[in-house]
Image (cartoon, rainbow, N blue to C red; front, side, top):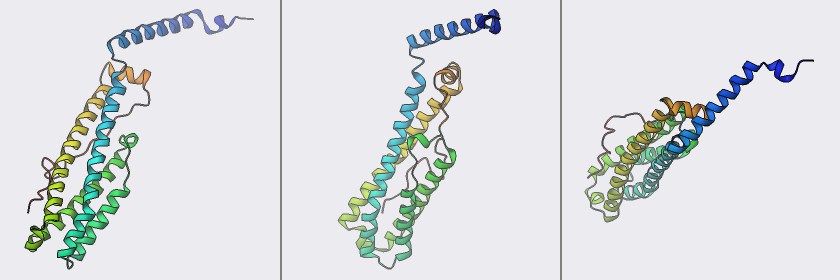
Length: 209
């Protein structure tokens, strides 16, 4: 009866041992220079940047109810515009994308589309303010204006930082040696999606009155 080693073949065993030894040497060498940890490090940085994007969009969402109520007090006849903002906010809030889902292009597109729709509805609401001088000078409204303007700036910065972090991560897992490291040690690593450009995406919406 042939031995197990004989069945496998000495050449095959030697090749496997050599491959395992080479992988061990590679792992030890890369571990020493920190290259093995680069993939998960960049991934965590991208996920943290995504969390900041969500935080800033949530900040904007939290401002909208007070803004709507303030405008309503001076311009109840703008019912359609006010309803549009409220509905767009509800839709944007219902689209949930966590850090583990940003590799799904469809989910991120849904999130971005919902936020863009809210931006459009919010823009239409703010345009109506021009018709109401008393509202434009209301102290509560002016405070909301300042907070909204700051939040729009922070959203733009957070999106830019997220795109940069994702670019670094995607480049790492698509180029050598990061591609090799990911295939061996992090086979679950997938490219993440970035925000696509929208009209005037290089600057926040104008919310000055």
